[in-house]
Image 1 (tube, rainbow, N blue to C red):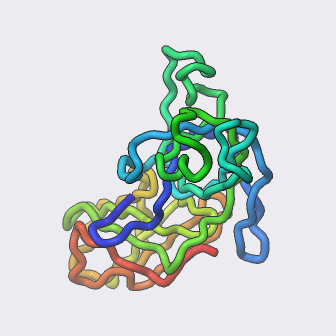
Image 2: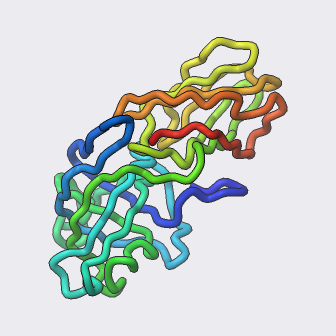
Length: 234
């Protein structure tokens, strides 16, 4: 999830979770969930550049290596951002290659994140994990794609629970227009909005909290650009 000018997180994970994982929303802040157990592997190389984005994009998890001789001393942990659904492999046993097969819970981590926990030669390790608040610096970022009649927005740097349930866009000459879900943290509007400054209404899937990002993009916005907002979840 990298724009032409800005990257929101160093470590990523393709995550398969078979049940709802939720913490608490207390005094306006997202609180961590209890610890649970799973396994983790890695993909790609040390650059962590091979990432995709899925429906649960944005949720953050603290992962700790446990009960393995390959864990680094002190059982270190790291925080990753979910970017996709780990695909099942029904031709392999769940305990021998089909790591992402339901109902198994599994994290397929970017290699740099995995190497924070254990020697990469281990291949697969048991882990403890919990969902945590996404601690972001600054406001949300909105990457623009599409054209004059179709607006596609990819939202990055989402704080708090990290996920998005719904979005709406408001032009300087329109009322609020509901956006439909496209993929991951991307939402679209089939409207002619070019030539208007744009604001966004973003609602968290987990907490239901809504944030307004006013006047994010100027009237001469262009596809391919990423615009910053001061608004974010806590």
